Image: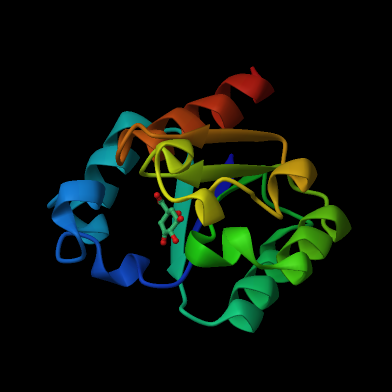
Length: 141
Ligand code: DQA
């Protein structure tokens, strides 16, 4: 089973960026622990701050991977292009957020991508990614 994790803008700064909201672990330190929990899955990781690069990556993997875990960061709240991309590809996409966006500023309450995604997980810290991978792997069983 192949799973692609995609992180959008500013998520390269996890561990440094607003630790009170996003925690103090970097994604690089979290990823080996996540992989160890799913030894039967191949979990690839990609991060970009650029909207078009996120779309390029999703188009590349989105016809062959078993699932995509997408934290689109702030593009969640702005991007019709990401919505269209998710609809265009075949792999199921799980939208994730580290923080509970609904407890935060009003502009974070609307997602342009949720309606195109298989499901949404938010508010569990980095465990949101674990739950999303679990959702994809258990779907196949
Ligand atoms: C985020 C929430 C977004 O509103 C924000 O722009 C991010 C991170 C999260 O993981 O909680 O960059 O997607």
